[in-house]
Length: 329
Image (cartoon, rainbow, N blue to C red):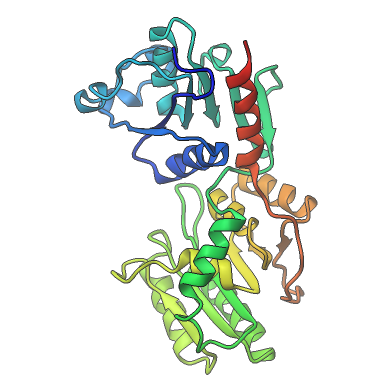
């Protein structure tokens, strides 16, 4: 048992960066010390959670050595594979540990004190479920100020307004085609050229070689000042600098995290999601961001201008509920 004025908080961090960013984002929003527990898996982690239940099935030997008493007051985790681990910790603590799970736990829902689920996932309403707008992340106003200071000098030769183009790519179920790559980069070039602005462009490992080459060639022949970050580059990743310093952000709609991180910025956000790029779940997310005023759809007749919008901060909503859990008798 810990001193009543301090809490022992664990974040379960597995091998999926998106899950880790969401869980760490909530922990950071608590503004309390926390311990990151890295979790590695064996092939048994592929088993459904109704088999794994509250156990360490699928957790590798090294990770098991990290899961020892004193047991935490709160566990924050994200994703299906961490859920049995969180439940096991609560079992070892004889029910003392409170559990905050981000996204569907895929079974054993009643064991969790809080399940934070994006509204677009449409999970059945339960007393322990918190619907949030989008996915939690680590892009706060303070971080944007810091990143702006870090990158301002680097981009000083690029005139404003600056248009950031954040490009994802194909997923298991959708395809980012060369035609899409050409359309989105052409729209950005035309918008920047019309106002004598500049471009900040980044690709991802999912973009694909053909699309990457097309984008680089279009930029090189555009006569518009630009900065292009290839995801394979060994240079420091300017992604957060782009978010902090762009007046307008264009983001492809294939990634929940990219859309939600862009919606946390001050720049006007446009989501490019033509038919074939976004699945139904992503489309529901996009619509919720449009309805909330966080972003606008990039349509054929859309004029790309900066606009004011609220900063999307779902991690704070979850953190507020976690504080209630920690302070509950």
